[in-house]
Length: 86
Image (tube, rainbow, N blue to C red; front, side, top):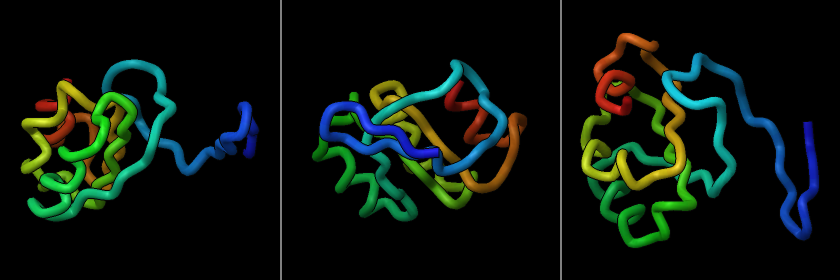
């Protein structure tokens, strides 16, 4: 599904189980390492949706209250990251 809002093209990139809220629109940034977390911290976190391939990447915990959304490719609603993100 693609949709254009102003000059911005939006598209659905996946589906999953929401742990809170209904969805988010923002800038997707991939985080796998502590270095990635530091890099993301230098951006506007209020517009950031973090994508992480692993639920074990707990280095993102300090930025969770500041980001717009979180997508995790593994784990589930009872994973450590999902619980901390609530």
